[in-house]
Amino acid sequence: MSVTSVTHLNFRGDARAALGFYHSVFGGDLAVVSYKDAGDTRNPADADQVMWGHVAADSGFRVMAYDVPSQLPWDRGENSFFVSLRGGTTQEVAAYWEKLSVGATVVQPLEPARWAPLYGMLKDRYGVVWVLDVVSEYNG
Image: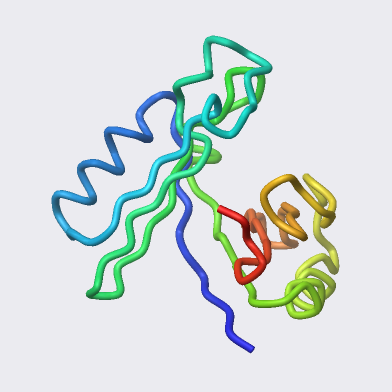
C-alpha cells in the first residue's frame, strides 16, 4: 500500500495563475482541469475556473490547487488550504477515513464520485481539513 499527502491550495479565481507560477519555479508537469472540462457547469460564471490542478516536479515537489466555486464560502485567512490524502485502494482510504473521522466534522461523506471510486472531506478534531480519495483507480 502507498499513500501520498499533498498540500491543496484554495483560491477564488487565482488557481490557474498560481499553478503557472509554481510550475515556473519548480518545473515538472502542470495539469489543469476547469469546471467546464469536467462537465460541472452549475454556475456558468465558474466554468473556466480551476476545478482541479497540480504541479508535480521530478524533485518531489507537489502542490494541488483549485478555485472554490462562487456558491461556497471562502476566506483566504480561514480556508486557504487543505491536506489531500490519496491512497491506492478503497480499503486503504476507508481505513484512514475511519481513524481521521473520530471527533471530526464531515464536510462531504466518503462515497463514490464521478472522478474517483471514493472521495470525502472532513475537518478533523484539530480543525485541519482533509480530502481523501483513491488515486490508483482514478479515471483522469
